[in-house]
Length: 315
Image (tube, rainbow, N blue to C red):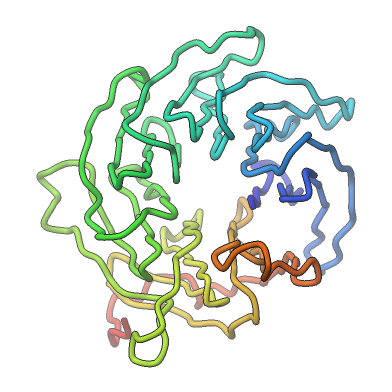
């Protein structure tokens, strides 16, 4: 359900529907060493790292946010919602954890107090969220987008309707914090800028479609490359692609898996791309198979993610 790399090393954590959060040490030669694991009382939907790489935060269907100290291997509760916790991010600049929930709120926690520092009521359940200080973006179940300037975290900076016609599935902020990419269940991504003055740069494109767009798949996750500002999309069709938004082209299309891709992330230097191949529950529980859950690693080549200023457009 969630993959996150440590900001200081090649430690990778994954939250899962089996109630477990696991940590691995990924070597540059491809060797993966299991390090530790902790559990919740219900499926885990989100995880995040502290800036120093010493702690991992997790949350999910037990309605709790927890902090796992990797040094002591101890886990403690640091927050709670009235419904499952869907997303979370550590905000180093504010020394707090922000959580988004299906209880229609986002909350800020300093992790040393039982009550949140601040609670913001939203229009609907949190379906997608990203935080890169000072930009926090939240997509809700009613297709609204709530943009926050975290210098005023209690106040919605901009509230807008999604530019996409169908349910929001994922959102990812530009590395320069000037905007975000939004993915929907309809096999489409919108590239949006926060400031109205840049609205002329906004556009949307189709992806994760087959048979001349007759078969349409959800865009389950979007992840930006930390160096080049290009991004990856992962789809329910089992494929992932690398894109260059500035030149409006697809950089690389990869071979499909036989199961949906649910999430993914680049490591801190952008040399490894991790993605999860597992069932995304889109066809109900009767189609679930425990045999289909895998985390895959792709060694990233610069030519796959570096922008091409003179593209032969291949969208």
